[in-house]
Image (cartoon, rainbow, N blue to C red; front, side, top):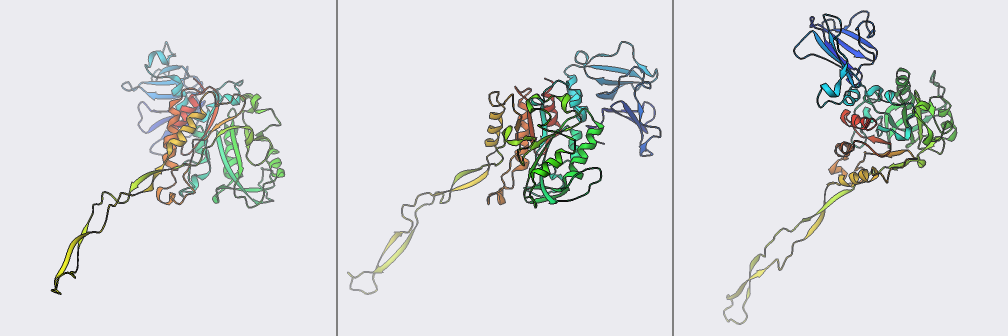
Length: 433
């Protein structure tokens, strides 16, 4: 079970074989011995757990009193009595007042990342959102250096709170039947020249569409790019995609005028192939994707000293033929140290500077979609055969920069490699500060 999906878990007060899981307006009772959910579950929280609201953010057992449990929702918390089967008198109370140092926003974000956009105001502009995203989103299936940038499937990324997906497409057939998906072409998902063994519709859009059916107040950004496509992706192909009815594009409204109310339950189309819809050239983007290599000068003749050898020749001034003249000959005369340029690794600070400069107030544009790629690679150089691709180390360094910002002057999408739940939560939290 993905912990970003569930609001909380509780141990049964008297039966150690039972445990309760809470999600949204429902709860499940699980049997450890039977290794399955009990018959008749899930059930609705309301009406059974007297006095509790639906859509809980968190739940936990009392540390010393097995008859008491705590439930959290927003800025309030409830204490529930198992024996009395109801909320204790005097509750709910304020989280901030009674749980010192604990912010209710943290609880909400850690336990409700699956539906975090649902809690935001309908009138909020899309351009004002801070969005966690994944770069080369479908590479989780191929564990190959220079290719793999994600650990989690599209479904898991959605549940973790990712709301921007980066898909690279190769058109592989001009005609195909995909049942309920009315499309004319099929597309393989790619990273560079490497096929990922997945297709755009079944492994991308279907997963996202199913998620939006279950979470109809969420909004997903999807970027599509042609990458080493076998067949040309034409204007007609883009029109075919847009005709599916799941996309929000420039035929709806200008990007700067879109609100969450306009887009809930839909995919916002970001086009890197041509100028249809919301196209890439109209956005404010930082994508310093290539890591420069750092060098230092290494001494290759270190501190060498002069050496001599004994040299002897006949001495013509001496009548005795066997008399010779000998001396010590310097054979490394006045040698100087020499150096050569040697690579020591990737210059990750170059990327960090690009990220920090982009996130300055004067760089973010209030009337354009801001996209700040945290991803980068050292691929493409012969030196990388020794240094590797740099992707994992760069992800650690650039994703950590997010912790420096509690709030931005404008919204921004952050496509990342290997995003952690902590980094995702920090980006989501920017929307509530």
